[in-house]
Length: 392
Image (tube, rainbow, N blue to C red; front, side, top):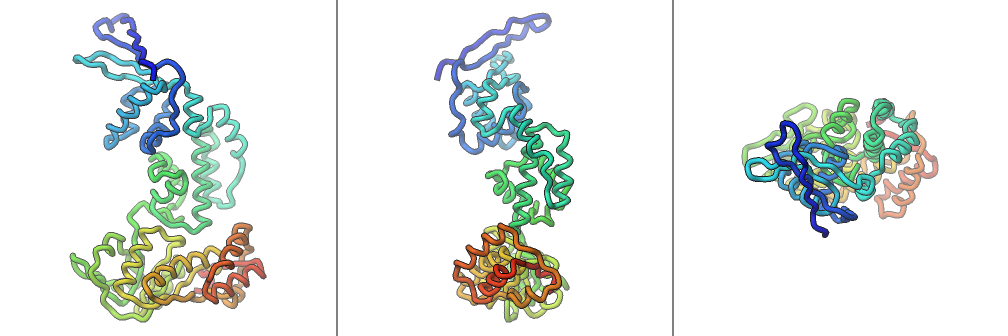
């Protein structure tokens, strides 16, 4: 790379006792495409401060845990020709005071961002597109007066959350961030606050806390710290994944594990049947940590499983994913009240979406249990689906 250019800044007025200089590298800047992910994530935050900001502000954006990363990124950006620094000579050394980003339009393109004019045009194109979900649409309306680049990024989060909800996903905030933007730390505190102020994220399957298993069972979980009575509550209790991981045994007697997807239905079944079966809430498409914890419990107490999900294409796939846990543990499982007759008996059903129809075709090509195959064929013929809350 070309040598850095150092320019002394002439002193004026009261600043005559303090030396100042600028440093930059001339020529075309180096590509940012191969930056390590942590550097790229930090640079995306810094870019919002462009074109000029104080170095102390950029350090604050990095946070105390990433000061070393911030200094390394700063040094690379300077050597690569992306920034110009203003520095003062204090106590025998040069100290960076401010940073000015150069070739800003090219930097934004390299980061996959758009320039201001393009962002404004892009926002105008989608600003009035409404969401079918009233809560999401109300939050969209709050973006009316936001800067275009912020409005676009936040609207993209609403789109991702709509897909997350429709897809019956469940996980931590980091899981959602990874799904929405490809990185577990890609949402800012301000973006999380904005989402949480307008939506019940927990109800949409985005939890801020540790993954846990919600269940009621006539059994006791034996841990190094003592025993936990899983049937002590009349409805259910929550056991964290880390607690399950440390468990030594699951003592008690029950005939079957019973998994229920719909939260309201789960609570009903837990109250009604949790004194004789192990009733577990199946949170949509469960994340890996949840699956590992449940597998641990099944390993400690092998028994057959009855799995109940919404009678829709996602429900069939979720039941199959959950059933694989029992298959891998050498135990049998079967669908529970997931059949065409039950779906046909509902007083209210919904029409299949195009996404549902595509899912059905892929599901029918799989070696599903006969009951799920029959349910899938019923939905394809009649073009309808349902919710288990209506009958369970």
